[in-house]
Image (tube, rainbow, N blue to C red; front, side, top):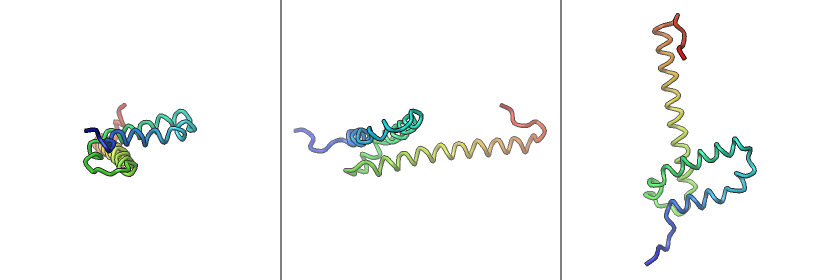
Length: 96
């Protein structure tokens, strides 16, 4: 017997394809950013399949937000580490 429902990965692909005209209208650098956001959504397709929602866009947005927040936390940690290093060695400055 064949599948009657598309897999979550197929639903994500269809959703990304539905944004094709929007993507084409963006500047090239913005297209690359949008592509990265869509890649973030694809990285969490297993979790999205587990949730089993028919419309994937909410899951895609949450996946994108999750990846962006991970990057924010990593940057905050780097800034914090640099501040500690600067406080420990105030005359040395920040090494490259």
